[in-house]
Image 1: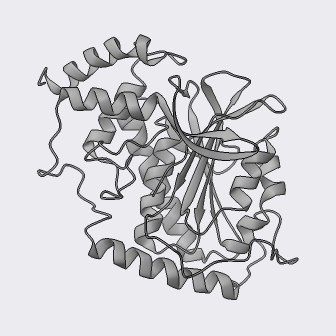
Image 2: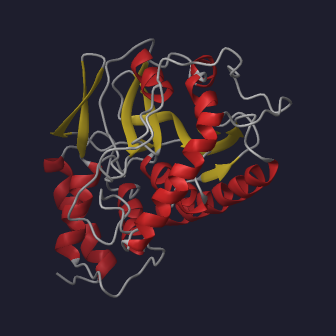
Length: 322
């Protein structure tokens, strides 16, 4: 699941500092939704009072993603062990992984879209408490809603514990919006996105509403102007996902929305890696979050400024083992 990170131009006072998208490496997709077919009856916002059925396309996608998850597990992907003995790491590796994941972007904005280009960036994170609210498209079953809210709430607690930064789930008025949407609902979510994040740029709206089938889930983190401090975030998770992919998306996107903005193929054991070997936040990843929110690091730091501090922190966390 490839996670895209991109820097955007400022629009209406907001800049999308990080875009993360989760994309499997399964080759060509047998299911290709028609991006021009926008059902006129699809809801423009998340109205819980209107319970609708999945469209035929959405039901077909549910079957496709269930098969995809089964195939991934058969290949040894989507592992749920968080401290695997077969993936040891040392201080040097932890430093390198942090530098590449927190201080580089995988994607850059160009011509209203995204291009794959590894580029140096700055350290980005939240300074105010992160308040996650969870909402659903009208077609998401009540049982799924209850389990998703419970999972996000439990995971928010884990993120808070790992980062030492306040992260919680609120019923309304959050600054980190987690949306579970089926295909038709996501295509029509533009007006709601503009309500949730006033000043959101059209490139971000377009990326969400036209999400390709190859992308499982996505998160955008926003700042005011060119500040490296996040003020808002939106994560979108496909409602068609089976439990395995649903959980994987929750762990990846919500963690990356805190500021770990890139993928690094050598990071292991980690969810910040394109190979999708692990689906849950690992102990290694918890250390990355702890490092990111260490007060000795400051938002806006470059690699040159941050590296010696990161090296010191890693040595403390691992007891100096190199």
